[in-house]
Image 1 (spheres, rainbow, N blue to C red):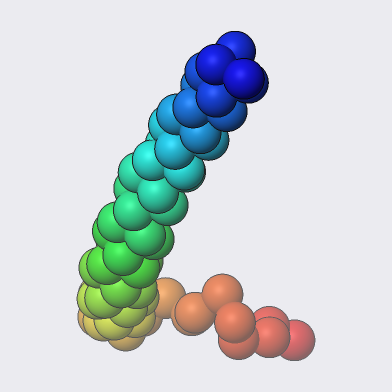
Image 2 (cartoon, rainbow, N blue to C red):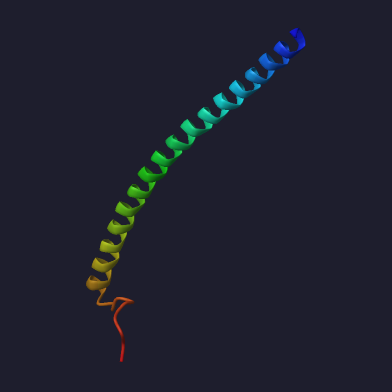
Length: 71
């Protein structure tokens, strides 16, 4: 019976180690998702600022915007 108890304890320890690893990876994933959302927000702000500046430069230089159809 001692061998079975030892094997049982060993499997329990292995399962706990995997659960700990899973939880650590899950926490890391949540942090990365938050960072990803923050970077996307910053990108959208900078991209919007860029688009505004491009429009101003084109207006100042009298250049038609690429979205306008030239006939």
